[in-house]
Image 1: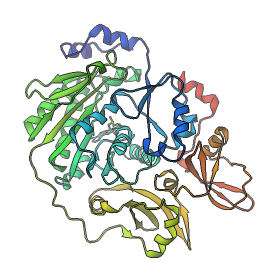
Image 2 (image 1 turned 60 degrees about the horizontal axis):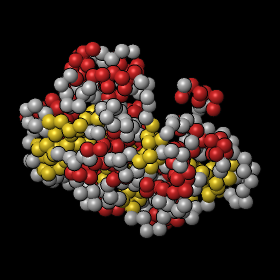
Image 3 (image 1 turned 180 degrees about the horizontal axis):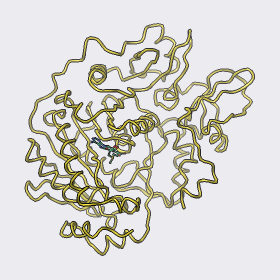
Image 4 (image 1 turned 180 degrees about the vertical axis):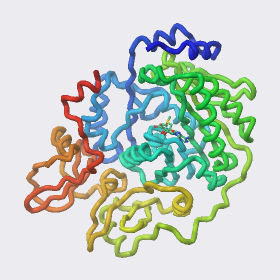
Length: 471
Ligand code: SAM
C-alpha cells in the first residue's frame, strides 16, 4: 500500500520531515517491539528474577522511559503467562514519552487527581498509574463500551488500588469543574503515525478524515478543559503527523482557553523534533520513525491559567456504603498488613480504595458512570469471602495466602481455563502463581480443583494458530 501523496505533500515543510527517509522507513517493513515493566509488581518478593530473565536476550532501555525496554524480536505475547499477570505491558516506545511530559510539568510526589480521558486499551493509564503516588487518583475513562472493557481488564492486571475506570462521554466531565490536576488526552486521530505497523490503515487516510479528527479533537478538549483546575496541566497527544491535529489544535486551544504552552527538555540524542505552532509558538514534540526507534507520535503540554480549584462537595448519599465491621473482619486476612484502604460495598460486591481518597471516590461515583473503582475484593458468602480475580492480581493481596506455583505449560492450561490436575495437600482457595507472579485463583475441593480464571479473559488461541499472528 502506497503512502497517500496528499499526506506527503501536507507534511512537506514540517520541521524534521524528510520525504525520502519517511517513504523508506515505511517500505522497509521494519518493526519495533517494546514493553514497559510493572515496577510495583516486580518489587514484590523475588519477582525481579523473572523480569531479568524475560529481558535477558538483547533487550535495551528506552532512553526517555524508566521501565521501558526494546525487545530484539516480537515474542508471541499471548503465550507468556507473565503478561496475563500484569508483569509488563506491550507499549509503543514513543508513547512512553508521556512519562517525560508528566514528570517535567508536575510534581508527582504530591497527591494528584489525574484524568486519562481517552484511555483504552490502557497504555497511558498503566504508565500514569506507575508514575503517580499511591495517594493520588487516576480516573481512566473510555467512551466506547467494548473498549472500556479492555481498559478495565488491563487496569485490573496492572494491580493498583487508586484507579477508577469510567465509561463516559467527555462532556460528562464538565460537571467536575476545576477538579483535576492533570488531564491526559491521547486523542482519537487519523493515525498516520501507525502506518508502519498497521498497513491497512493507509487506505483509510484522507484529508477529509484529518479534518473530521481535528473537529472531534476540539470537541473533546472543549469538554475536558473546564474539569482542569487553575495551574493544572493538560497533556495532549496524537499518533498523527498532520499539523491540523497537532500544531493547529495547539493554536486553537490557546485562542480559546486561558492556557500557556509548556516546553519540555529533550536530550538531542533522543532524535525527537521540537516544533512550535504558527500563531502562538506553542511547543510540540514530534516523533518520526526514521529519527527515533518507535512509531509516529506528537505531544504538547499546557498549563491552565484560570478557573480556581474545585468546590465540589461529595454527596451525602452514595451508591457505595462502607463495609461493616464484620465484613471488614472477614476480609482483613486477605489483605497485605498495613494497607491504608477503606472497604466499600456496592450491592454484594466489596471493593478496596485508598482511605485518603474517600472524597474523590464518592464524587466520581456520583457524577460519572463507573465500571470499576479500586480493587474488587469479592463477595461475602456466610462468613467467608469468595475472592475476586482482581484481588489476586492486585498489589494489596496478602503475600502469605496459600499459593501453588505452576510451570509454563500448566500456567497456560490454567489461562485457557482448562482443568488443572495438581495433587495438593490442602483444600480451599489457592492462588495460582507463575514465576512468583499471581495469575488467578483455583479452589481445591475434596475430589477436584475448580479453575476460577475469568471466562471472558481466557486464552482461546492454540500454539498452532500463533504462527499466523507473527507471520
Ligand atoms: N490512550 C490509549 C492508550 O494509550 O492505550 C489510546 C487511546 S486511542 C489513541 C483514542 C481513544 O479515544 C480510543 O480508545 C477511542 O475509542 C476513544 N475515542 C473515540 N472517539 C472519542 C470521542 N468522541 N471522545 C472521546 N474518546 C473517543
